Image (tube, rainbow, N blue to C red):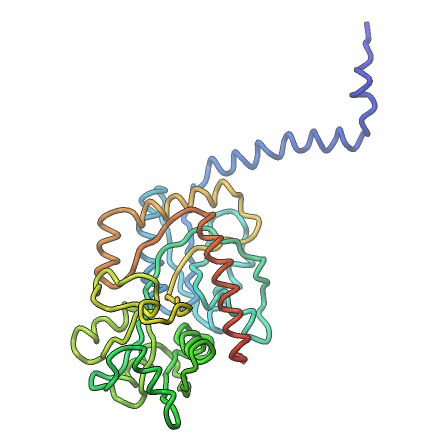
Amino acid sequence: MFQRPPLSFRTLPRRTLLLTSLLGVAFPMATHAADEWPNKPIRFVVPFSAGGANDLLARAAAEGVAKALGVQVIVDNKPGAGAALGTDIVAKAAPDGYTFLVSAAGVLSNSVVRKSVPYKDSDLVPVAMIGLAPSVVVAPANSPYKDLKDFVEASKKGSGLTFSTAGTASTPHFVEGLLVTRYGAKLDVVPYKSGGESVTAVIGGQVDATSEASIVVLPHIKAGKLKALATTWTQHISSYPQLTTAVEQGFGELRIAHWAGLHAPVGTPAAIMDKMAAAVDQTMKTPATATKLKDMGIEPIGGTRGSFEKFVDEERARLTGIAKATSMKAD
């Protein structure tokens, strides 16, 4: 004998019942897809040329993540337009967990310093911090300045001093911007096409100072070709602990490093991003990997998705403030 459904059920709108039914199917499907991931090679898009700090961190992470997840991880260098080219590739990729961007400070500042970029910042989601190469302020080996404080004070006299960068909105440019806007340094920016060219100019005495990744300048410092004035990160460099930080010298806001992390296209399932973050964290905490990176002047970080999201939010706000204060424009 037919029995009518309970009143509470009968009075639900037809479309509500349909939506409930569809959701019941959709959630298990999403969970199932995450359970199966990964089952094919993963691509790490590096928006810079090979050989730099970002690229080296990407390759170290790729090697460890491949072992942790059991699939091949391909590092794909896509330099151009100040990292905007590679970033756009990932922003427009399918959010299926097989394409990630190896992000950096320049990725966060592009939308502020460039007239236009082909993607929105909201098109990408923070996934995991890989590590960082602390920035080091360096001067020629025969420089009269004993540290960063001495250099900044000297710059305030006369016509000031010169400071080379790896181009507009590069990490050295942000270091210069902080020294000028927060601490009154009088510096004339000399832009070069790369950090390598910028450092070479300092070694040759054509420029008074620059700031560049530890992995780039430490070999020159140890060889006596450059004088280290300070590291601009918050902690001492593991492979060169005798160098004091800018914070210790009284520059409390000078906290900048050449960092690398992973971003994914918006819409990538949270379960997949959690797995990737865990794999990166595991890699950075593996003794062999950590030792290898530290010996090169790179600090492994890792951590959770939440810790990297917090870092990205704070870094974006900080860099945006510096860019606006210095009227920094890349175009």
